[in-house]
Image (cartoon, rainbow, N blue to C red; front, side, top):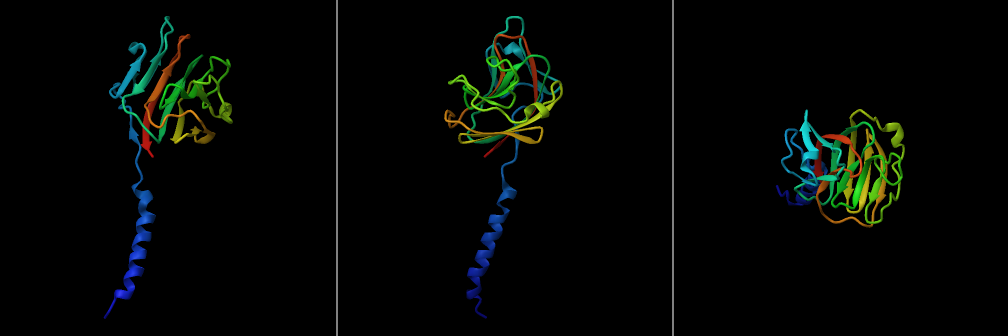
Length: 201
């Protein structure tokens, strides 16, 4: 029996199956903090401001109130960063995205003197171009908060405790760079980060 006429149909079905299965092979989140030490990270500023306590990265300044940024040694292009953060009192921190000018804020803005958590700060312009929506009702000061930051090209999408609070497109982003955690100069503060993991897009 000649089955040659069925080959195109079989090939088409096989191709459709493979395409439908592609999401099953999507990249998985990879831990970028091992929970034990700061291997894979390098401080710009006082190294003593950074430590690991009970499985969390602790950024804590002293009376000198110097600034320090803890950078990943690896650079990333497009990614989704997931993490938890916790703080009490007056902090000015955030996640630097691929360079020191692009940041998702955590805590009190030094310039605006109010909480701008989950809002983008563009250092080259010295502005917050937009503000995260509904953050005040979602943010749990003194407790662990879950944040997810999607960085694709120049678009930033931020989710706080399971709800999207930001969709912003910048015009300043670099194509590739490391991720940084901040202790801001000019104040004595403490912030904790844990569960940091990254999915490359």
